[in-house]
Amino acid sequence: MSSSAESLGKRNRLVITASTLGTVFEWYDFFIYGTLAALLAQHFFPGESGTAAFLKSLAVFGAGFLVRPLGGIVFGHLGDLIGRKYTFLVTITMMGVATFSIAIIPDYATIGIWAPILLVAARLLQGLALGGEYGGAAIYVAEHAPPGKRGFYTSFIQMSAGAGFLLSILVVLVSKGLLSKEVFDDWGWRIPFAFSLVILAISLYIRLKLSESPVYAEMKAQGKTSKHPLKEAFSSWPRARLVLIALFGVAAGHTVIWYTAQFSVLYFLRDTMRLDASHAEMIMAASVALGMPLMILMGWVSDKVGRKKVLLAGYGLAVLLVFPLFHALAGAANPAMSEAMKVAPVKVASTDCPYSAFAEKQTAECARAMAFLAKRGISYERVAGQPGKDVVISFGGVNIEGFDEQALLVAITAVGYPQTADPARTNYPLVVAIVLALIFLSAIAYGPVAAILTELFPAKVRYTSLSVPYHFGTGWFGGLLPFVSQYIIVSTGDVYAGLWYMTGVVVVGFLVVLFFLPETRDRDITA
Picture 1: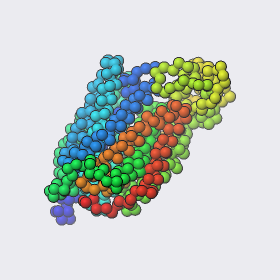
Picture 2: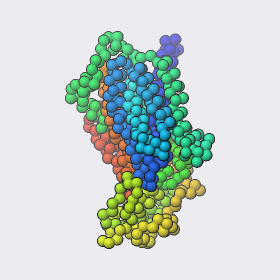
Picture 3: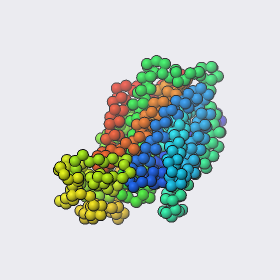
Picture 4: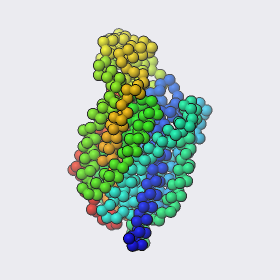
């Protein structure tokens, strides 16, 4: 191998390693909140209703996603104006500081309403930072990639989201292992957030070794960089049309599959199937670790067969398989719960029941009954009641009029509904296999996305044009998925109903990609 080829190979390895590790760490900072959302609910949103507190915690998680488009606009503009490298140095610093701040915010018991206000502020800063990070890393790697390998090179950036999620779970598990449950629940949960300072130092050290993207450096040398990136990105209908295709066809669709395979599965195992929290986290860690190479594989496949075919395959398979896989997951994780739902389905009969998932305290008996069932992950069907009767709860030949928590708990346990999953009956290998299958579906759709988005837009406004639709799609459609899907579940009583949100978004994405997205694999991205 010649010295120039060896030098080029060394440079490319540094580019991929530095960009990917930095993005892994940013995703860690962002996802550590999602991993600990249930525990944060206890400290920042205390009240009588655990369901309401959890939904509020997820709403704050979603707030970080809602602000990501603004981060995409601000840092996309800077990335096209001053360069790729310096922009994502700023974003990673902002992310590390915002994440560490969560570690030191006093809880509600200490400072009252200021606790959730400061928590929201930290999440908004995280969202702004991530709004600039992904576009910079994806573009930086793509603009270094040799022809015919952009899908493979940029798939490492795609893999970084799963790696960040995995790292967040591992740090939580290690922290739990070093502390008693009581200590971790009391203050130990702050350790994973504080760990972000260590991660920030490593990220900055690595990224400071990088030089500017060759495509951007060449444009700058020729005086061809954009002076008004945001204006130019939307200056004509053809360019605006590409942004809309990227938003609804690429960003929104692949993201809801990814978040379903990660957070929805975690919440389903832990809160619905009643697995021990640490067991559910270990299952997710093992499955994500096994599934990450699949994203690289699908990026490589997209170099061979085209981006569009791979993306359509991911969308189509996700729509067809998500419901069967979740039903299979229930049977493998908690057979007793799955069997009870089949043989003794619960019906809640009431008239004009004033049930609100956000209420701190349910007053009506029918609402208290539904809150009781939702808290225990028990699926139920709401039916019309009889006048004069607040609520009648029916299951397995049993009819209970009115709500008495202890009596309902005894009766529902007697017909087979377990309070927790029995580890002896959980088929752990099958659970991991099913979760891995769901992650594989997300990998098919997720693997080629960075390549598609970098190839879709011209170089001089690429950072802006990519970041805006990506973060509207991932931030608004994907970021709200944990909250929206959980809200649908507690509102309808159907533990599988939240999957319809993902299905609807993916169907729209499939149609947009099929009819409007051009094949981008062989495009020259230096223009």
